[in-house]
Length: 174
Image (cartoon, rainbow, N blue to C red; front, top):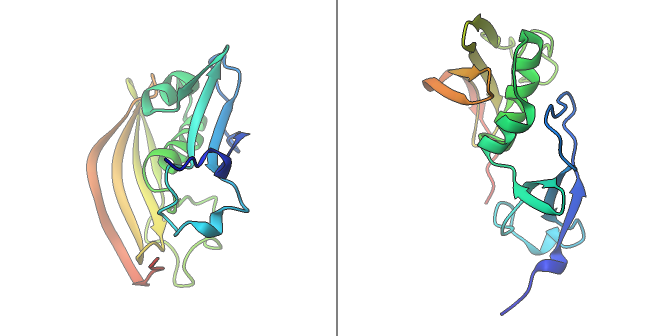
């Protein structure tokens, strides 16, 4: 059997605007080494990148449940957007970007701008988010869905994703 362990590397990983609230010994990203990536077809590079959490001598997969345990409780509105941004990147659509008023139109399509922006509503049991995203993956468009972020970090989809505005053809990977 062929071993691919020399094709992968493990690096310490930090989130730009999110800091763990639970004790750990680091979050690590496992991915194909840059000098080996050319050997793999995009999207067919085996396993990865994936993320591990180190606690003592053990490593644990960064699952949705472990992510929630690491970064909860989510108690302030200012914590919600960084949390859902990292969650969305890791567990949902890595290539999409969340659209906010703060991000402006510079990151997005060169059209009239987003039809709507992400909105966060505080609730007694957490936060309801109207999540607006922009994607160029296969189709260039703005999408929206509603999710609920619980204080304990669990994320539930309330309304499924739908297209808000199609802009054109996106990027295709063959």
